[in-house]
Length: 402
Image 1 (cartoon, rainbow, N blue to C red):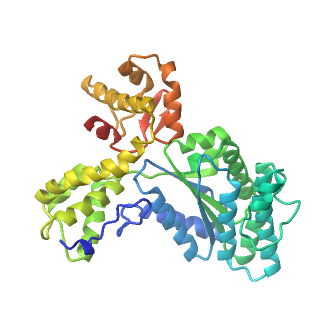
Image 2 (cartoon, one colour):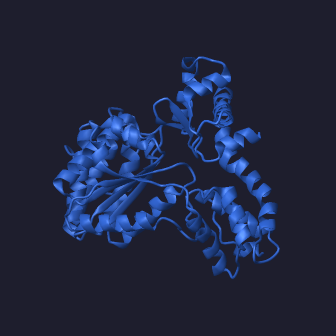
Image 3 (spheres, rainbow, N blue to C red):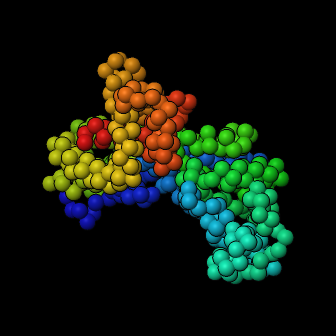
């Protein structure tokens, strides 16, 4: 098969040639855009799921839909070592530019508020304030979004931005990837600002994406966040859509799969979008001709697994310290123990923390530092009290294979 014509895209956040299985989310978002544009109440949106299910791809697709509707949009990726002010200011600067408001004075005022919000991040350190510039060609508006209280400032900023969008008859959408990495104060402020904007009816929404425990992070910040956001769980694809993700790109290039090959690929990938792209790419490159067969998949699978072991699994494993790796391996072993004891283990291999401690022969309390560090690094998450799971699908199998 011609590798130059290989249609698959196993990259971080790269849109696959066929965005299969996400039509419900796209249709729901189209309704949200129309309702907000017409002044009807709607909730902001939060997408949650494991690594590799396509949250970032879907987030970008939703942003494209907003742009097509004439909305102003901005996107940022949260980082645990960075506050919200600077990346959000850059995102909102872009959103204002996309709105294309004809009144230059109104635009300059809002950009000045954005700049004031950004520059407040420098605090009282004059040298830092003088050295860093937000790239906004408008004078700061003093006394607006610059109090230093992130909650007050964010409400004022969103209010002014929403008013500008309302003048245009459109809206503003802020897209936040890795939302679980926002600091507690920033999460609380974001919830409060979304709450205020929804009550005022201004056309501004936040669309966040993050790991499965993101709803718990938001709920811990503001109890009303459970009613503030529309939560959508992004999961692996069912068999029909997994087949479409493989077949449609291949057919566009004049190639095909036989049924046995599709069976083998679904068994190998579990329907996870990133794995579908990775295995599909390798199977295409190694297959001698079309249609791709189960024998071709059998030849390609070890190569795909080696690439995943280095790039997808290995890069994450290397981020852990020796003690944290021991904890990760114990999680994988605990899932095996439970299976051997005929206890139910779910698809993501979530296990009780007590079982992990039993594998290591230690008290659960002594393992808290390793567990907390892995939680902060985004390698594991706690979906319910007393249980933990890997944020990366098939990670347990990777560890057991080492």
